[in-house]
Length: 188
Ligand SMILES: [Zn+2]
Image 1 (tube, rainbow, N blue to C red):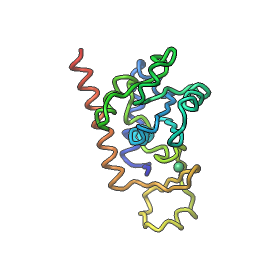
Image 2: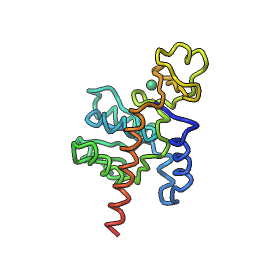
Image 3: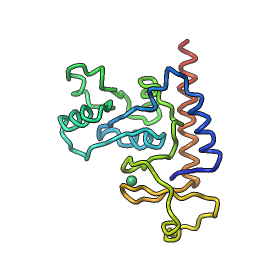
Image 4: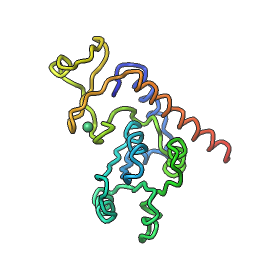
């Protein structure tokens, strides 16, 4: 589910160029979602951020250990995490169950740019996508136009290309940026 050589990536690059200095650190954001936030996790990956998730049922100590080892911020709906020492430094607590509201909460907490590097990572396993080679294109059961790129995940070998689903997701990501900007303006 990726795009290149078309206007989606074009606007992505423009967006990156215009990130204010105050948000530059978001480009290096390393995140880790708990299992209650699997949908949000996939959308964070769709935006292009590195967002890990441990298998369901993983104990809190494993989540903490991974976060510490890889310097990741933990995004969670589990209040237990708030009891840990210096939780405010490495925990982003999400209050709501609604995906759109969760996205806004995250925007508020971390200045997330939802069009950071859209569709550059596998939504399922978080690996950065690479362009498929000619043989992988040939084996795909879906017929792509010559000018449509095919991307592949080196981690789980899923293929991605720009279809109507990607365009819908892109519009939702862009909408979250607009809502966050509107909220920031109202708070000024
Ligand atoms: Zn994958």
